[in-house]
Image (cartoon, rainbow, N blue to C red; front, top):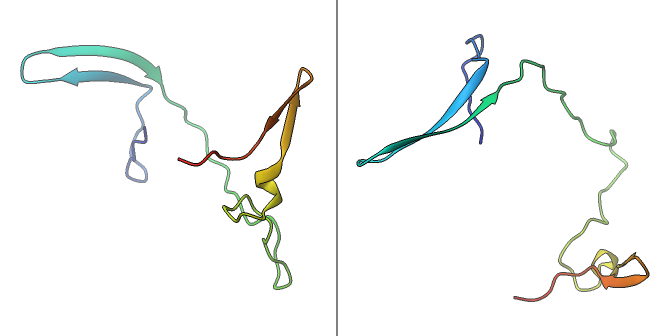
Length: 83
């Protein structure tokens, strides 16, 4: 869930979840909010001479689709199954 406040608006210390219907209402969880600044992420590399060309695409020949993960001596294929 994301709630957007106008710049400079006060942010409450907590939020209360409520569900309201035409017949009833219910109060849910109370959660605290954070008042920390977000980190701004930038590109991993800068300049004109780099290319992101080896991501986990859906191409049949992409090696990211043919990996094997071994956990407790059991191998599991790491590719998406059709469907």
